Length: 168
Ligand code: SF4
Image (cartoon, rainbow, N blue to C red; front, top):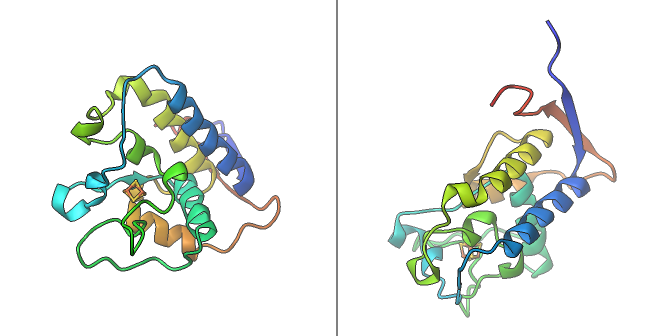
């Protein structure tokens, strides 16, 4: 039996791939208009939480640290820990996860149809597997994993089997 192909991806490569996915999404001709109402950031109120792949979580964690916040806030109201504690804006808006860009906010135009973005979702899943992730997790859980993770060594890698090779 042939062994499944193993992929290796450094953290820097992964972050580059994640950014490329976000940039590609921006180029898609899908009408959306997020006006930063932050209603969709109220997870408890909406009953919906964004899910992040590992590459996205590391991308978000890096942006969070760059904003000056180094610990995950505990939000008793069930809102996103990445909302600014004083002014309530998103701390990482330019680096916000894929789910926050394609979300369910009706005011912004409603959710993207899966067929409009499925190729980009697959790319993010591929990066997740290539980094040794275990699939998308809810934003607070994914961020915790990313923040607890040892900082990447230059060229540091984790190897795993790609989802395609596993027939996913
Ligand atoms: S990451 Fe930003 S846009 Fe996404 S839910 Fe959190 S605060 Fe809102």
